[in-house]
Length: 388
Image (cartoon, rainbow, N blue to C red; front, side):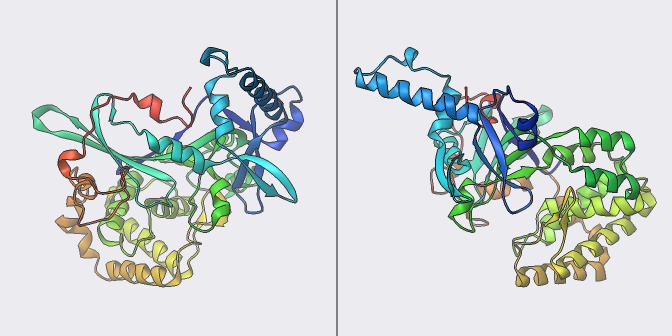
């Protein structure tokens, strides 16, 4: 089991991109994505078709209210349409007023009634902080011989689009440079359509309406196609990060994965078990260099720097810790490292309030006896952006 996993909360709702719209005049998509000045970041707004339906719906609602209201069965469009209207916010964009779908409004709606169990198993929920777009949940399933299977998952709000995840320039570059992605894999990645997901809104209020492109589908495809040895090295690197590089806060598993992908480009993926220690040290050295320069381009979109938001002091402290590990590689063999990979570590941040201060759903850290909820909610009802 991986240390964590990601699911994009999405539904049978697809936002079209400008290129798709220009080639499909008879489209019936409700939404469309508009690029912003920053590569990989988008606004999610109504299409012309969606705006027309929205106008008719609003006129019908006004007419019904004027006549004294109407029964729920006669309120018009499907719930998803109605909810999209509720999540709409008007902003100024390029000198014009634009009606966009706010990920922040959807997020608030989702948090009002979070599920309390998944497939019958109890679930714990929390947010690391108010600005994080992700909601972390932990599920605990009883297994044989008294053992428990624990899964930690980050849920991120997302909507599918018609956009390809990758630019053609990226694919052509990898065809000539990468030593690990095959032609077949590149073709599969090229055909993958993207999702846009909610981003952090800590910088300013404008972020409340901005979505970013998600490459999680591509990442899962790449990792799943890896031979065993690079996967083992990735697990060990994640454990090193969790055990020794979790403070100061800033370095995440995604950075580790990105370093691995770039190293695979240079070396290929045919790694040997006998070379494991050396490969781990090379990955650590690459990580240290990235922290030194505060530059680690996003693998699938090199115009974006994954370390852009990390301040100089945090980067310097983390680099120092990485170099200390490089000077004393024996810690890679210490039992405490691998103890951090067992099931128990996954519960400690949920159950030990003294170790972290998460924002809980009821806005205060609950006692252990109050963690479990009793209402059963199906998993597929939660991992969707908007319920039907």
